Image (cartoon, rainbow, N blue to C red; front, side, top):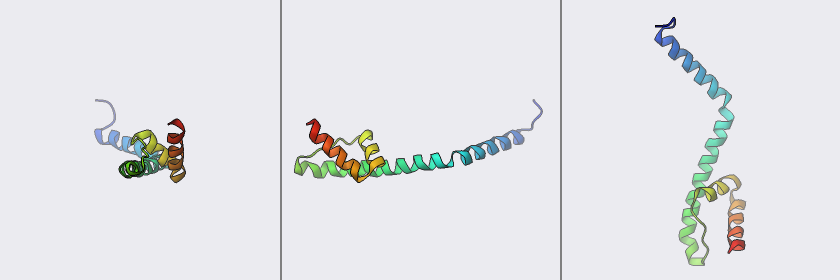
Length: 88
C-alpha cells in the first residue's frame, strides 16, 4: 500500500467534495430552481392540454415547452401560444 491510510484518503475526498459544493453553490441552486420551475411548467402544460381541447388550442407536453415555461413563466406561455398560432 501507499503512504496514506484509508480513512485519510476518504477524508481528503470529503474535503474536496465540500470545497466543490461551496464553489458551485450558486450554479447548482439556479439549476435546481430551473428544474423545479420546469416541472411546474410541465404540470401546467399537461393540465392545459386537457382543458385546451375544449377551446381547440393545443400545446405539446414536452421538455422544450416546459423549459420555456420554466425560464419565462407566464410570458413564455403566451409566447408558446402565439408561436402555435403563427406556425399553424
